[in-house]
Amino acid sequence: MKKLTCKELGGPCDAEITGNSFSEIGQRCREHVMAQINSGDEAHIAAAAKMRNASPDEQKLLMAEFEKRFEEAPCL
Ligand SMILES: [Zn+2]
Image (spheres, protein in one colour):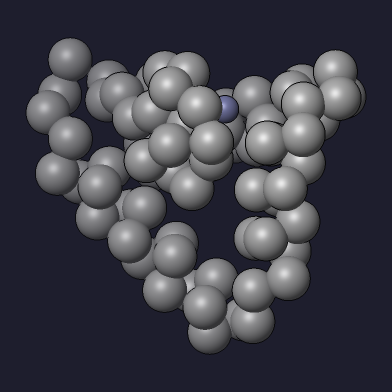
């Protein structure tokens, strides 16, 4: 299992996201961001909007960067 923070995945806070694979972490991160958005957290709303407004190429680069961080994170 590995651990990344919301910040390391492009988010605005230090919440810890854990998972056994990059897709699991991605899924948990989306759930975390959605929960924050549903409770009206401006920083997460802005971060999600920024992701949505990025071009497909930019999104691909960001995802590659996040995946690299996942690969480099130590196993727990
Ligand atoms: Zn967060």
